[in-house]
Length: 492
Ligand code: BG6
Image (tube, rainbow, N blue to C red; front, top):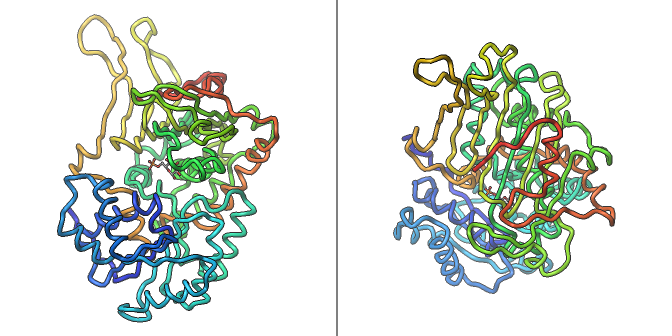
């Protein structure tokens, strides 16, 4: 196994340091990197929040979070102690300039020097991104070696995304802005690039001549839980489609870059976003389905309706299914079907590339069914790939055709745990590598494409279709694909 390289000392400051994302994802990820020896002496983590907590109280809170969110077999008391020793907490009210000076003083105190790498991770509402950057600049915390991380969503529509990008861009150079989409840090998503471009056999087939259509699914069993206040203003289109699903689509559809670096990969993804068929009100009505879960059974337990979770009437969608096309030479006429939802029967994210039928059916149908070849790329859980093909059933008495699959499980092949996406991405931030982060033009292109859907859904008559929790979404999602003579691939 290749050992990860130790990063440089850094002051890793998390705004929203006591929030859900920090406690559930960021601090466990830093713990695991510390456990694997990637954090050097002098690497400090500073949680910033409005909470009146001193360093000790924050350490208690983080210890509790690690116990909850790190697998017991990965918890090592010595490493927990070491990580807690790196932790500090600063209470800050954004409006209070005195608090910013305090933050400045805390960061100066004990820092190895003015040129220490400073990461400012903004795990807070996007409306605060601009103001935080401005204050950081005013108190002199931004240097050549400072980087800012923007949690998604960047904005809630094109105009707000542009305003945020402008405001953050006044303080940080684009090369120091890390717009995070954690799907890009998933091992299986990075492997998609390798599968496509480090092998030769797929590329000749990867086009409209041989591919019938592509399906991309990100299904979750959870509801909105404690995140109702955020989610109800967002919905599945902003929360999942505008970023995670479109990023997956880009990686499936992009042209091979000349080499892998921060600009070439992002240039190719941008071209895909720009080639997506623009939505019109007619297309939204025809090709986009919004759903919202009602009561039902999920994971074997009764699940509440979305409106009960957010405590009130709401037309926010918790499910989206849509059909689009990439209007370029490679993909002309190939539908891409995307769907995502909460309170689905299974937690699964998967890309399925469905190939065309063989041009000539030389085996009589009476001797067995044939199914088109399909490549399933399993993003999570059980990361891996399956190639579904047709084989002859062994034995005499004529040729009987049977579907079979070639299975690749990453865990089976490599015998190792896939790190959480945040582990990889946080280290990339410290190293200054923006390849797996979204560039400004990508984010804005994605918002440009979803804008007509948001506009059309903002009409007072728009209502998402109800579906019972624990089911595959509204019937209209099935109709969307079946009217093209196709069907959703089983993900379970
Ligand atoms: C986040 C969304 O970006 O991704 C959540 O805000 C969603 O609503 C989550 O649950 C899904 O991530 P993962 O890694 O569990 O598929």
